Amino acid sequence: MTRLTTLADPEAVAERAASEIARRLASAKRERGVAHLALSGGTTPGRTYELLAGELPMRAGLEDWQDVEIWFADERCVDKDDPESNYKLAFETFLDPTGIPDERVHRMEGELGPEQGATGYEQALRERVSGRDGDLPVLDAIVLGIGPDGHVASLFPGAPTLEAGEEAVCLGVHDSPKPPPDRITLSLGVLRAARRCLLLATGASKADAVAAMLGEPTRHVPASLLARDKLSVILDDAAAPPGPLARG
Ligand code: 6PG
Image (cartoon, rainbow, N blue to C red; front, side, top):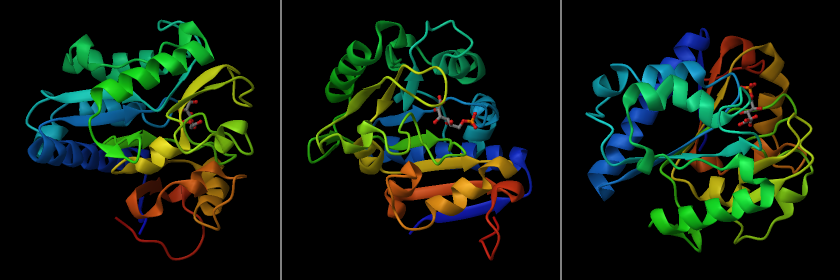
C-alpha cells in the first residue's frame, strides 16, 4: 500500500525524505552490496539533497556514500552547466558536497538530445544495474516530484511515452508542456520496477494533483500509474488533499 505521510512544512518533508532515502540505501548496501538511487529535478527536492549532504544520513544508518550509484529520473536537454539542468541542481546541492566520485554518478546527457541521450542512458542502466524485473533494471530508490498536472519525471499526461512498450527503459521527450520541451526520462516501467519511489510534494499548487494521483489510475495523471505498493508519498499540509490522512 502507498505510504502517505503529511508533515507541517517543506523542511519536515525534506527531513523525512532524506532520512527514508538514507535508510533504504543502507539496507540495499547491506543486502546487495550496492545501492542505486535516482534523482529528479525541479524546485521540490533541493532541500532534501542538501540534507543528504549533511549529517542526517549517518543518523539514519547510512555510514558513507561508498557503493552508492547515482542516477537520474529525468533530465532537460540542456548543457550540464545550464541553470535548467537537473544534474547541476544535484551536483551543487548533494554530489559535490558529498564527493561521490564521477564514475558513480550517471548523468543523463541532455546535450546529446532526447533520442541519443535516452539510448546511451538505457545502455548504462542495463550495464550497471544488475537487479531485474523482467527485462527492466531495478533501482533501489527514485526521488520524484509531481507537477500540478500530475506528471512525474518527464512523463506528461497523455504523452506517447506512456504508451511505450513494457521493455522501454529510457525515452526521449520532444514536446514537454513544462519547458524546456526536449527531455530524457526513465520509462513508467522503470519507475514501476523500482524497489521504492518517494514522491515529494509541497505547497497548495500540488494539492489537486496529489488528490488525483491517489484516485483511479489514469494516463491523464501519470503519477497515478506508479506502483502503489512501493510508493512513499511525503507531503506538507498545504499539498495534502482534504480528508483524513496519516500524519507523520
Ligand atoms: C523536472 C522534473 C519534474 C519535477 C516536477 C515538479 O522538471 O525536471 O523532474 O518531474 O519533479 O515538475 O517540479 P517542482 O518541484 O519544480 O514543482
